[in-house]
Image 1 (cartoon, rainbow, N blue to C red):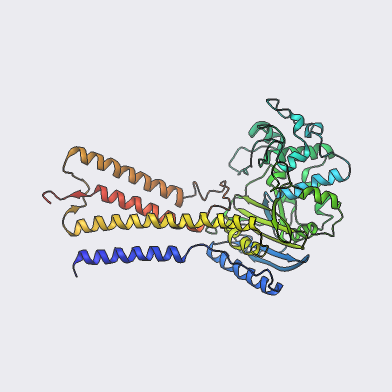
Image 2: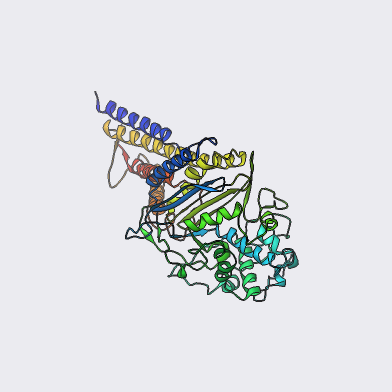
Length: 494
């Protein structure tokens, strides 16, 4: 067999392998039988979590499921420190935006005890901060609308601050000098997720009670529910997990100032108590207050007070996710049936559990809304996988073109390339240098701690990190081979 035939065979087999691996490795989530007994459901969820922790290099995770207001599955996995100390039921994880449901309960406790009115402007209670005057009337920024994200306030979310950064002293400093909270649309006309609105609620609650937000939440919600290792001040908690990058190395945990929006911490044991409180048996809020929290917003009934609302055949399903740098989690409750679910992780790759683990549990809820959300996330992951395959096939095509040309004596690699005409040579070298720059840029994006993996990046659950590894390899390979191909020279006279 000639050398060229061997090259064709090798490249063809590599192309087939790329397609097979891409097809076989397509992301999927396990569908569970809603009629299955609790022990079988627990075993299936346990298996899903085990596979996911291995596949996504998750350092530590906690998760659990509830049925008929009874915990049917509860697990604590991995380690909480770089030294290998194990995750326990008392290990506190950063909640990200799951902090908002805790904030909702804290604010509603003030309403329940008659200290504030849901439909009065938040400015009536704020003493430290004046909402900037502008096109829209601040009197429309009511407490109810802030809780529902319909008050027209800005700033979708906040990042934390590292030790190397200039940091705000408190929420007031944050809103005045770092990211000023204001009104950007007519209050009550649309729902737009606003962490800025929750910072206003945080300052309002502190102004009304004279307590720090952590102390207020502890007295009104956490301690009455038995949540002894949770709160908005990690310094006072006994056991707080470290945070880890995608490849398991410990990284800096950022300091949150927007506590009510994304600065909460909770242990697995405590989070189970919080979910069970949603399902009945708690006394800190009346049933009417809970119904208020779950009531649909106007004009978007798919949401409540920081909860999504998904219809199921057995009642409404309420949920909220949290993605805060390396921290990821999700909670769901269905009060009518006493069902609940949660997971928390301390690792960047833990965001992938929102597809693998959450969607496995959601498959039992038989919700068209949940199925659609999981299908959309699955589609994104598969699309990235096929894009990776496309770049890999392009790289193989270039490899064949270059190798075949060299074997047949039509092209040669040299430090000083030549061409059949000066204009064609200049154009080819310009594109070659551009390919080299793109290759270096891809390496910088995918393989350094500068963009994707840096601590400050908030990697939302829609980003399929596992598939991005394949995309990183194929993109850098394609640009590298393109550079070599364009830098090679045609042999004169051939």
